[in-house]
Image (cartoon, rainbow, N blue to C red):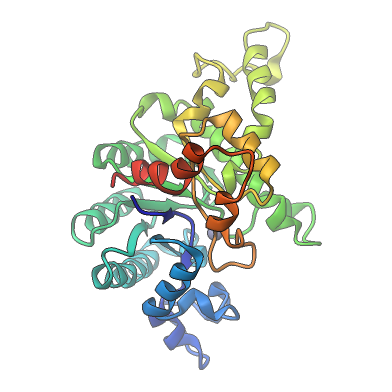
Length: 326
Ligand SMILES: [Zn+2]
């Protein structure tokens, strides 16, 4: 078995080369891609050397989320997604033993997103898609996205959720890095809540969804979601009246339907996550090469005293392989 990192990012070199002297690339300029961190677009062989140093056999590549661009005209985003997917596919073709990938799709246009997903899987060899937590403010339980979920399930595609653009925290404060440190985790809990309460997980029982950043506050907040679901059965609780109009079972019963990456940073948090969602649901995810990377993740996980050898192998090898259908 191989050690697989399912959370890492690439800034396409074709984008970098086009914008580094002040140019634009399909309307985008240098601001979208964290070019001050050169490792996002290092050469594939240099990336592999870093993976070897980190003890990672396979990167499941995703593009830097600045390229999701759900807010641009769909015709433009279609081209951006295709170009990004083609570049990742080149890396996957050149080093098939070291790279696999999740494609980005223009989900502000559902038929176009389905088309790009099918092309990416059938023609380019991707194993699924990566998505932002919302599409211009619309959560993924909205009716217009059901055809997309139907095709994702039918394709057996893995899905990786990651924040993109502003998080919910920005409207309250832009200080102290909190839009990232609190916002990213909040976004992921909203994604869990809407997909579960909105019935997406019931309608499409075979979906394989991984929530980045360890699912954010999902595991910590699940008991309150359960309490809200129970309150939905009470007559004098209008605030919760739709908390169980769709959902027949407690939200906590859906924890084990999702995967969660290992970006927890402390042993206590990782142990809590494993105990809450199940040791068969946590996958290695490092966020390489972002500043919030889970440092030296493989050695860190292998050195944790509160995890069994079976749990370590599950996180590093078995669980990501199952998620990605390898
Ligand atoms: Zn990330």
